[in-house]
Image (tube, rainbow, N blue to C red; front, side):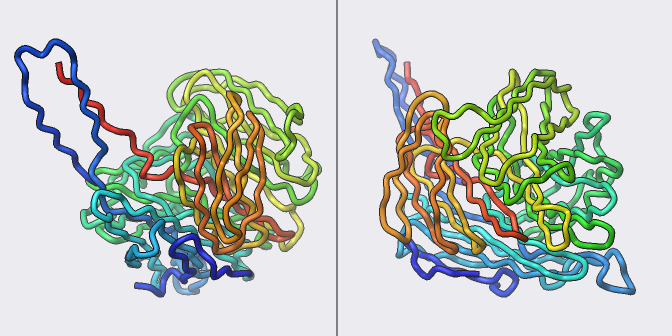
Length: 459
């Protein structure tokens, strides 16, 4: 793997497992004779920035005395950086009592006066073993009070794990709901899971959704936010067929866009690329369109229309796609969730990947490029208007034109920290990796600095 020593501001690559919200109060006077409303605008006070990484790849069954015991299969290499060269990034770890030596990395940065310190980090792992094989990459992310996981399965050959990390100082409780063929259920194994402070808990997906081939999970945290992720792996007839780490999905919305899905070779009839969809609350109709990346003006290569039943996941199998990169767009009449699954093939030495939908970006966002093969940053514009994006990274500054409804790929370097500035709302982005035996990708998350101003009207 290549590693880059250049950074926009602060950049580093570290090995996880080795390194050890603001409140605004506005007091407004009351005026008895005000003749016109007065609008006071204020931004939330800057707070500490905290990102939690998913940690190393895990494997079960390596202890002959305890087949259910988990072990570290491959460490996680983390690329990290901040928007200010003078920012002090504290690197801590959370305990992993169920997996000795795992200790996922947590990054903490204090604000600079009234300005929040922007931090970007992403991790990757590669493993080649008799029981686990493949490449995985995921962004380090902020913890949340509610998270959705779109991915994974409990079919034969799967060994998927739900990762619940609490990087804070207060114990959290997690309640996991499963959306499957029978709709929404609350499994006993997912009720009231206590996650102590600065600790990661690991829960087998099979204990939550046994017999579910296409589950979607909702994780609700109480008392403290959690960083939630899913490690998914596949074994075909005792031969490892790939591994990936899936972060929390973009929140339900009527439009979901997966900026780039990488096809390294035609799948044929063996394992088609699939889109998993869920309308959590309402029945709705949805349209799934697939377009070639970097093909402005070209019509979609495939369009599928289907009806979604509230609370029941649906799957769309895409046609055999020629090698290249594709954008998948989902439009529905009600909020939906979406993700795309892809494999490099069924031959030994293959890999799998889940590609999650990306949220719209605005203003300035920093993205870390985890170490990995042939990373690409893909920018997607909405259908409303042309956009431009200013990228600043290892190779200096470049302005990228993004025509309306088009996806544009930009080559980036492993370990790079990229500053992304969009000229308005409507840009979505992701980082993807590809090699003959390695696939992975993760969406670019909006910056915390994009928090809207608070507008208070005094009458």
